[in-house]
Length: 109
Image (cartoon, rainbow, N blue to C red; front, side, top):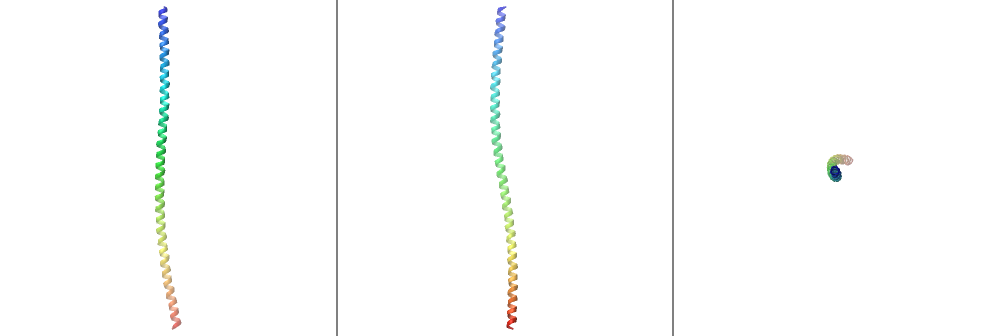
């Protein structure tokens, strides 16, 4: 009977040791998973920051292009209006010169 008790005791001790070993393995695996998830989260954060940076740059490039386009259109319209004003001014100057010449000729007649 004592040999059976010794066998049972050894089996119980072996079983407990195996359980403790499995618990250690489980804890190590858990630590590895936590470290891996932290690493993946860091990589994801880096990728997200890169994507955000690229999107920001693209938006800035697009808005700069639009601003340049609008500025060019404004400049062209401004130049057209200035040309019209200049042409109207030249016409008015011609009319004024003609008027003055007519009045001067009337005075000398």
